[in-house]
Image (cartoon, rainbow, N blue to C red; front, side):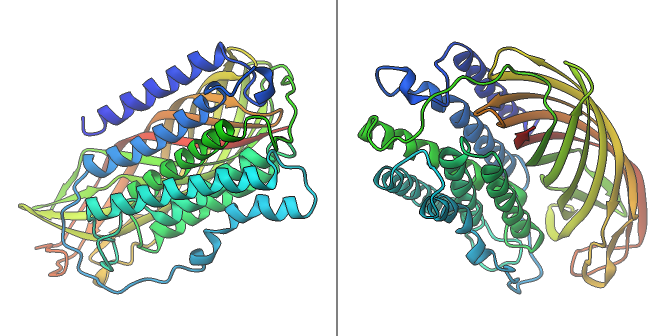
Length: 417
């Protein structure tokens, strides 16, 4: 029940989005109305809100008071600089002569307002929440500023360049997702931090562009509206990120092994067999923070990182030219990487079979660019071996195995062929 409120809010925001868009003007044309309307922004604002609420709910729905034995700060592997790349992309492409949605002044105002909203929100929440980072460096873990900036840039790239080529936003969101994964795997943030940061980045950008539209009207607006091609079961390539929310705990040796909300990130390709049925192949990573609980004391261990390959038959149905609903059931294999806990106090078997079911809502923004939000449920096996450890307060050796379940929440950007 810890995650119920967040999931309900996500579903409500998506249903509102679907209802409003189905009755709205074309979302890729601001010139289809006599004045600037909120309708074109409802889908992306809903996706951003659902992403932020997911991260916020995961943060407060899971334990966040625990000891962190290690205190060394980890390397950022270049993300200190790469976080700016998605934001720079539309400026670089515009300077190179590629058509963008906005003129120079309009783009500067929209993104400047977005940056102000993003910085104010992230810094305010960091000061108010005071969450310790996994590497123990400081109390600024929630939300992730790197993820907020990267997803802000990716969303700005989508606004400016998606009408030219869907490869631009897909590449920008891929880089933003990679930055989020690095922040988690290298111990700078928990998965809930980067999910909330991604939501802040998406919301800030859309609010910035909405304010820019109100101020500029149709001045320096370089795109012209066009109708979408009829909605169909298009072949696609997508990049996704989300949360895996484990249900229940694992008991062994007089202690409890708890799993915090985990980060998922994947590349996915799909091929339509007919108008409704298709087959998707997904390869991704999963990073799950582990805690050891002994009586009332909790200690953070490390992340259990895994690589997944899943094959999923899916069914999709178009509601209109903008929106499709889909459902799928899939199965595959998950290979666990070494945990690298102190003195190998906790180890996991190398791999397990995994199965899942998902339902999602897809919104199309241009002929070839779309976004999808999905909810799902997963079953997977586990096997852990524990050794006595003072650092993690493990009293005796033990092993434990079984089947675990998890809730799934994912957002994805898609290139449709």
